[in-house]
Amino acid sequence: MTRGRLRFSALALALLSLLATACDDDTLLPTKASEHAQELSDKSRQLERMLERLPAVAHAHLQLSVPVVPAFAQSLPQASSASVLLERRAGDAPVDEAKVRQLVVGAVPGLSTAAVTIVQTAALPPARPVPKLAQVGPFTVTAASASPLRVTLIIALGVQTLLAAALLWLLERARRAARRAPPNG
Image (cartoon, rainbow, N blue to C red):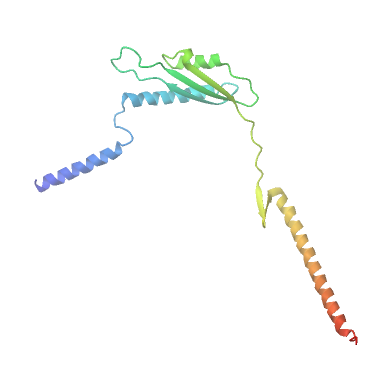
Protein backbone atom coordinates (compact mmCIF):
# COMPACT_ATOMS: atom_id res chain seq x y z
CA MET A 1 0.00 0.00 0.00
CA THR A 2 1.12 3.48 -0.66
CA ARG A 3 1.54 6.08 2.02
CA GLY A 4 -1.56 8.06 0.88
CA ARG A 5 -3.78 4.99 1.00
CA LEU A 6 -2.51 4.15 4.49
CA ARG A 7 -3.44 7.63 5.68
CA PHE A 8 -6.85 7.36 4.03
CA SER A 9 -7.57 3.96 5.57
CA ALA A 10 -6.40 5.17 9.01
CA LEU A 11 -8.65 8.20 8.66
CA ALA A 12 -11.54 6.01 7.54
CA LEU A 13 -11.03 3.70 10.55
CA ALA A 14 -10.92 6.66 12.92
CA LEU A 15 -14.15 8.05 11.43
CA LEU A 16 -15.85 4.64 11.65
CA SER A 17 -14.86 4.20 15.30
CA LEU A 18 -16.06 7.73 16.08
CA LEU A 19 -19.35 7.01 14.31
CA ALA A 20 -19.70 3.70 16.17
CA THR A 21 -19.23 5.36 19.56
CA ALA A 22 -21.65 8.15 18.65
CA CYS A 23 -24.28 5.61 17.61
CA ASP A 24 -23.73 3.34 20.59
CA ASP A 25 -26.83 4.44 22.50
CA ASP A 26 -29.04 5.84 19.75
CA THR A 27 -29.14 5.08 16.08
CA LEU A 28 -28.96 7.83 13.52
CA LEU A 29 -32.26 6.73 12.02
CA PRO A 30 -34.89 5.66 14.55
CA THR A 31 -36.39 2.24 14.05
CA LYS A 32 -40.11 1.60 14.02
CA ALA A 33 -39.79 -0.08 17.43
CA SER A 34 -37.95 2.88 18.99
CA GLU A 35 -40.48 5.35 17.56
CA HIS A 36 -43.31 3.18 18.91
CA ALA A 37 -41.70 3.02 22.36
CA GLN A 38 -41.26 6.82 22.40
CA GLU A 39 -44.90 7.34 21.37
CA LEU A 40 -46.08 5.01 24.16
CA SER A 41 -43.90 6.82 26.70
CA ASP A 42 -45.24 10.22 25.61
CA LYS A 43 -48.83 8.97 25.67
CA SER A 44 -48.32 7.46 29.15
CA ARG A 45 -46.96 10.74 30.53
CA GLN A 46 -49.81 12.69 28.96
CA LEU A 47 -52.44 10.34 30.42
CA GLU A 48 -50.73 10.44 33.83
CA ARG A 49 -50.97 14.23 33.86
CA MET A 50 -54.67 14.00 32.91
CA LEU A 51 -55.36 11.43 35.64
CA GLU A 52 -53.58 13.58 38.24
CA ARG A 53 -56.09 16.34 37.50
CA LEU A 54 -58.92 14.19 38.87
CA PRO A 55 -60.13 15.55 42.24
CA ALA A 56 -58.97 12.73 44.52
CA VAL A 57 -55.78 11.67 42.71
CA ALA A 58 -52.45 12.71 44.24
CA HIS A 59 -50.21 10.70 41.85
CA ALA A 60 -50.84 8.49 38.83
CA HIS A 61 -48.65 6.01 36.97
CA LEU A 62 -49.64 4.36 33.70
CA GLN A 63 -47.96 1.43 31.98
CA LEU A 64 -49.03 0.78 28.39
CA SER A 65 -48.32 -2.43 26.53
CA VAL A 66 -49.21 -1.99 22.88
CA PRO A 67 -47.40 -4.37 20.50
CA VAL A 68 -45.73 -3.13 17.32
CA VAL A 69 -47.72 -4.27 14.31
CA PRO A 70 -45.41 -5.64 11.62
CA ALA A 71 -45.94 -4.11 8.18
CA PHE A 72 -47.35 -7.25 6.55
CA ALA A 73 -49.01 -8.87 9.57
CA GLN A 74 -52.45 -10.37 9.18
CA SER A 75 -53.36 -9.88 12.87
CA LEU A 76 -52.01 -8.37 16.06
CA PRO A 77 -49.29 -10.48 17.71
CA GLN A 78 -50.86 -9.96 21.16
CA ALA A 79 -53.58 -7.86 22.71
CA SER A 80 -52.87 -4.38 24.05
CA SER A 81 -53.15 -3.76 27.77
CA ALA A 82 -52.79 -0.96 30.28
CA SER A 83 -52.10 -0.84 34.00
CA VAL A 84 -53.01 2.22 36.03
CA LEU A 85 -51.80 2.92 39.55
CA LEU A 86 -53.66 5.73 41.31
CA GLU A 87 -52.58 7.13 44.65
CA ARG A 88 -55.48 8.94 46.28
CA ARG A 89 -55.09 11.80 48.68
CA ALA A 90 -55.51 10.77 52.32
CA GLY A 91 -59.16 10.70 53.32
CA ASP A 92 -60.59 10.96 49.77
CA ALA A 93 -63.09 8.45 48.38
CA PRO A 94 -62.02 5.98 45.67
CA VAL A 95 -61.89 7.25 42.10
CA ASP A 96 -64.59 6.07 39.66
CA GLU A 97 -62.76 3.32 37.75
CA ALA A 98 -65.20 3.37 34.83
CA LYS A 99 -64.22 6.97 34.04
CA VAL A 100 -60.53 6.12 34.27
CA ARG A 101 -61.02 3.16 31.89
CA GLN A 102 -62.92 5.37 29.42
CA LEU A 103 -60.10 7.91 29.47
CA VAL A 104 -57.37 5.33 28.86
CA VAL A 105 -59.32 3.35 26.24
CA GLY A 106 -60.21 6.55 24.39
CA ALA A 107 -56.55 7.56 24.17
CA VAL A 108 -55.11 4.20 23.07
CA PRO A 109 -56.45 2.78 19.78
CA GLY A 110 -57.25 -0.93 19.89
CA LEU A 111 -57.41 -1.12 23.68
CA SER A 112 -60.47 -2.73 25.26
CA THR A 113 -61.93 -1.75 28.63
CA ALA A 114 -61.34 -5.30 29.90
CA ALA A 115 -57.60 -4.92 29.22
CA VAL A 116 -57.26 -1.94 31.59
CA THR A 117 -56.24 -2.87 35.14
CA ILE A 118 -56.63 -0.22 37.83
CA VAL A 119 -55.08 -0.31 41.29
CA GLN A 120 -55.91 2.39 43.83
CA THR A 121 -54.02 3.10 47.01
CA ALA A 122 -54.62 5.68 49.69
CA ALA A 123 -51.77 8.06 50.34
CA LEU A 124 -50.31 7.97 53.80
CA PRO A 125 -50.93 11.06 55.90
CA PRO A 126 -47.96 13.39 55.88
CA ALA A 127 -45.29 12.46 58.39
CA ARG A 128 -44.65 14.71 61.35
CA PRO A 129 -41.80 17.06 60.63
CA VAL A 130 -38.49 16.00 62.12
CA PRO A 131 -37.30 18.66 64.58
CA LYS A 132 -33.99 20.37 63.92
CA LEU A 133 -31.31 19.01 66.21
CA ALA A 134 -28.37 20.83 67.75
CA GLN A 135 -25.22 19.55 69.40
CA VAL A 136 -24.46 20.89 72.89
CA GLY A 137 -21.26 19.26 74.00
CA PRO A 138 -21.89 15.51 74.07
CA PHE A 139 -25.68 16.00 73.99
CA THR A 140 -27.93 16.10 70.94
CA VAL A 141 -31.06 18.12 71.63
CA THR A 142 -33.71 19.98 69.67
CA ALA A 143 -32.65 23.42 68.51
CA ALA A 144 -35.31 25.04 70.73
CA SER A 145 -33.91 23.48 73.90
CA ALA A 146 -30.23 24.06 73.08
CA SER A 147 -30.06 27.55 74.66
CA PRO A 148 -31.79 26.59 77.94
CA LEU A 149 -29.48 23.57 78.20
CA ARG A 150 -26.40 25.76 77.69
CA VAL A 151 -27.59 28.14 80.45
CA THR A 152 -28.24 25.19 82.78
CA LEU A 153 -24.80 23.72 82.07
CA ILE A 154 -23.10 27.09 82.70
CA ILE A 155 -24.95 27.50 86.03
CA ALA A 156 -24.05 23.91 87.01
CA LEU A 157 -20.41 24.56 86.15
CA GLY A 158 -20.47 27.76 88.25
CA VAL A 159 -21.99 25.93 91.24
CA GLN A 160 -19.37 23.17 90.95
CA THR A 161 -16.60 25.77 90.82
CA LEU A 162 -17.97 27.48 93.95
CA LEU A 163 -18.26 24.14 95.77
CA ALA A 164 -14.70 23.20 94.78
CA ALA A 165 -13.43 26.61 95.99
CA ALA A 166 -15.35 26.22 99.30
CA LEU A 167 -13.88 22.75 99.78
CA LEU A 168 -10.36 24.00 99.16
CA TRP A 169 -10.96 26.89 101.57
CA LEU A 170 -12.22 24.49 104.27
CA LEU A 171 -9.26 22.15 103.76
CA GLU A 172 -6.79 25.04 103.98
CA ARG A 173 -8.53 26.31 107.14
CA ALA A 174 -8.40 22.86 108.72
CA ARG A 175 -4.70 22.54 107.85
CA ARG A 176 -3.93 25.93 109.42
CA ALA A 177 -5.93 25.04 112.53
CA ALA A 178 -4.00 21.79 112.82
CA ARG A 179 -0.68 23.70 112.68
CA ARG A 180 -1.74 26.14 115.41
CA ALA A 181 -3.05 23.54 117.79
CA PRO A 182 -0.60 22.55 120.50
CA PRO A 183 0.71 19.05 120.22
CA ASN A 184 -1.00 16.66 122.57
CA GLY A 185 1.41 14.74 124.42
